[in-house]
Length: 170
Image (cartoon, rainbow, N blue to C red; front, side):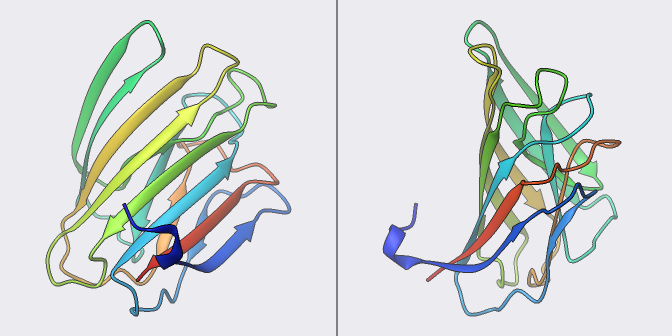
């Protein structure tokens, strides 16, 4: 994990109204790694999962593995050859619209010429009955990452007030 003094905020977006996605584009290539922090909530039901896509790639070039727990049970899942990377939790309306979640994703060697890896953590608080999880993801592309799109569960939207900040790691 990077020393806080080496994190430089590249951009922050705070939604004034609900949105189907949040995108950071024209990401500079001057850092070694990236960190994405998302705080907020998604509307609808169907899960509290957060997904990423890089460089508008919607082909099945992503894989992810997850382990999660809720205080009484633990579970894991894996997705391969998917159209996006499952990499965090942001709470949805199935529990309450008042609970806010935080997910952090570290994206390593984002300008390198090898496949891109990411490590995520997230929570979906439900006042004592929520879920926490850790994720590891892979984007099977050797292209430098120049844009990141953050997606909620299909059919959901990000609520007004959701904030996403992209950091560069020196």
